Image (cartoon, rainbow, N blue to C red):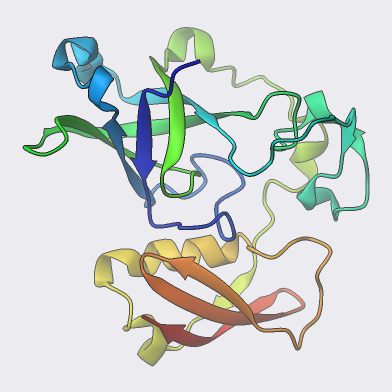
Length: 222
């Protein structure tokens, strides 16, 4: 398969990424097409759609063998379920899928036409295989059942972000940073209240601790 584009986001690594697309609407990304696919004609009509499906490549998870079961983080990292009952990156083929909102289409001088999207769950420079329009009349199923994922879909931490530390972040990034932290970036098996974690976001290193259901930011570094 051919990589048609890469996405630019505020996440240089996977730590801190939302576990699903659409969870944090404020998170934006910019899709930049590869030179062979910088043909504006390929986007004709796309402006009429509000949301898009992105098919992309999980990087750094390729394996020579695959496992029929995985341990979803939201189940504590201990319970095993079938790989095809999850969205785990450890799959026979490292293909991810995200539904994002199309904010705007921009023309640039250096990289041609780009797509600005929101609700992303991809790290910076993730390769994209394909882009398809989201069709509400067939893609939306309000009656759908969420299986074991329904147990944890409302999970969130209380975030204590001291004002002097929060103001080190650009104003337009502050709310998104809080929402990312509320989703609990830690691996589910780590519960050490004394441990200090670091999340790289928008050019900053946000360091925090978690005690029970409360996350406290202790340092922000450029």
